[in-house]
Length: 234
Ligand code: DC
Image 1: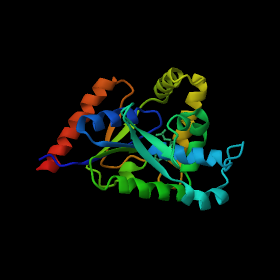
Image 2: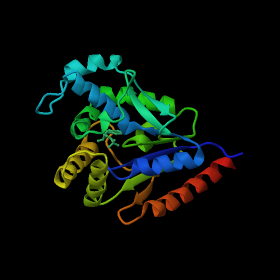
Image 3: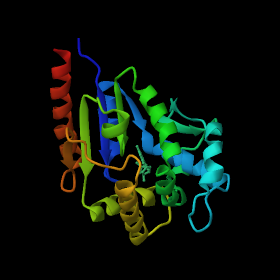
Image 4: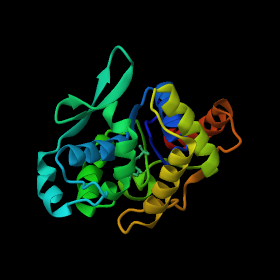
C-alpha cells in the first residue's frame, strides 16, 4: 500500500506555489493547505480592528492580546471544489486577496506571537499526513520532517507579470509597477525577518520556474513526488 507523505512547498511571493500545490493535492487526493491565506486572514482581522495605522505601522501591543479571539479555518466549497478561508466564521476568501491586505501582510507575519499561533495550527493540520502545505517556513519550521520539500523560485519581473495578469482577470485595478514593488518588498521582509524567515531547507528540491510552463513544472515535480512516495512505501 502507498504510504501517505507530507509535502512542504516554500518559496518567494507569486512563484506559483499554490498552483503546483493544488495540482499535486488533486492528483494524490491529499489536502492542500495555503498557509499564506492564514497570515492574510490575520492581516484582515488587524485591518478590520484598526490595529494597522494609515502609515502601515502595526499596533502590536493591542493586537497580541487579541490573538485568542481570532479563529481561522478552511471549509470545502462543494460548488467551487476549493477549500476557502474563514475568519471567525465568515468566508474571507476574496477579501484576503486585495492589494490592501498584500501590502500589510508581511509586517503582520513578522510578529513572533502571530507565527506561534499559526504554526501550532498548521502542525496540527498535518498530523495525519497526506497534506500539501505551501508557505515560507514549511520545510524549515512547520514540517521539518516532511518527506518531500520543494523550494520554488522565479525571476521577480516574471512573477510580477503573472500576478498582474491574475489580478487583472479578477477585476482588480492595479499597475505592473505596483505589483512588482509589492513583490520585491515582500521578498525582502520575508527573507530578512527575525522569526522563521524564508530560507531554503538544505534537503529541499529547488524548482526555478522562470522558463517552465505549468505542465513542464508539473511533470518535474510529480516525478519527485513519485520517487519520494516509493521510498516511504518500501
Ligand atoms: O503566499 P502568500 O503570498 O499568500 O503569503 C502572504 C504573506 O504571508 C507573505 O508575504 C509572507 C507570509 N507568510 C509567512 O510568513 N509564512 C508562511 N508560512 C506563509 C506566508
